[in-house]
Length: 258
Ligand code: G
Ligand code: MN
Image 1 (cartoon, rainbow, N blue to C red):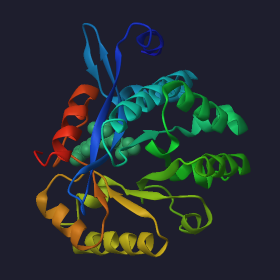
Image 2 (cartoon, rainbow, N blue to C red):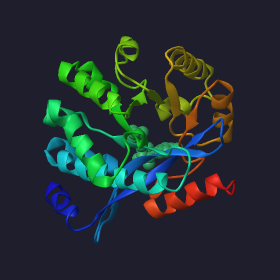
Image 3 (tube, protein in one colour):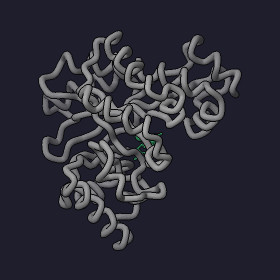
Image 4 (cartoon, rainbow, N blue to C red):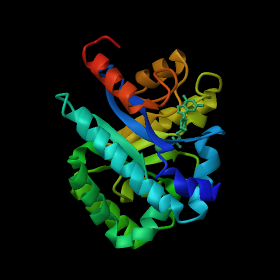
């Protein structure tokens, strides 16, 4: 699989898909998450939870991430030139990518932004809690540098790592993405519902935006909106779709057709 994945970029087997993020206040698509899709000839779609760990084990994740970054920035540039508001594209950044480039990471990012004509405010970087818990001073300064350049930083899968809440206050974090394992239980389990309310309250006090991940049911969306969640992402709104479909959804959203 590693060998096949290595050739996948040049053979055009990889594609960036995008899953919309919907704002509860405006009811519009205000952003999207870029997600990698790999279709192998004769085999079909390989789920990311199968091939991403393979890529993570080798240095392949570096090339794949840089490729994805470029695709996402190009898409962000295209979509933002057609609307008056900001459509923020978020990109999953592996901790391996951070560690590989170290202090150079912000420079790599800025170069991709320039090459694709992408404004920093159109991009959000998604990192996991584990990256922050390793606590490398170079990681923190890289995040701060990216943030002062105008990008925003999101914590992905929030609540699933060994959450040390202190980092929320100490580190440069703009957005918290509550993991879908919590969202899926809010309508059936009162204790999980209270936990999500507490998460929303913490984020509000720290002036951070919250995205609920994996929203599948209308009851979940109603609960989240009522409790002050900013944005939702999940199958209730749309699965990840190819770039061309995302473009159509954005256009429809801003003409109140979606
Ligand atoms: O960890 P991260 O949030 O980046 O993972 C995103 C993954 O979650 C994608 O592979 C996407 O297909 C999947 N996903 C997105 N929305 C939903 C949803 O509503 N339900 C479920 N079960 N999976 C989802
Ligand atoms: Mn993510």
